[in-house]
Image 1 (tube, rainbow, N blue to C red):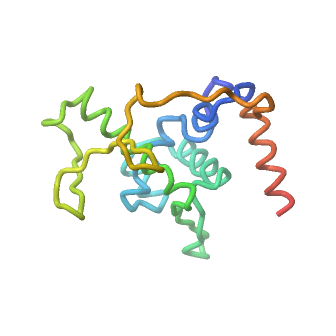
Image 2 (cartoon, one colour):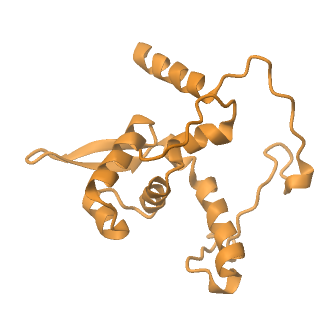
Length: 168
């Protein structure tokens, strides 16, 4: 996809995520999918990305199971792309990136996109919480566990996923 980075020998979930969504156009396509865009022409208009680049990114996101292509017109064949459950699981990633950009690039008062939590009506700010106890956590609240001796590399994990798809 135009990148030179190769994460296949690393045993790291961040590297594995970058392998799937690490291209800037890819993240913007996903952002726009959350905004309701589904069709090639919509992304083309929204992003102004070259058609071949957009086609390649959509193809990759479908292959990775982040988007699903659905035929909406048979003649000529036209597809729309919708987020899968795997794709919807990227929402916290995008919200964290949005929050970081608001804080460190724009400043909270100049943020170009703001959200309100429908439940309480207050401005939404993403926070990271422990799934077990609900406590908000920061970097000093986390301790890494040692990696298992048999931890798979990114390349091995992708190969296993492909093998599992082939036998399913």
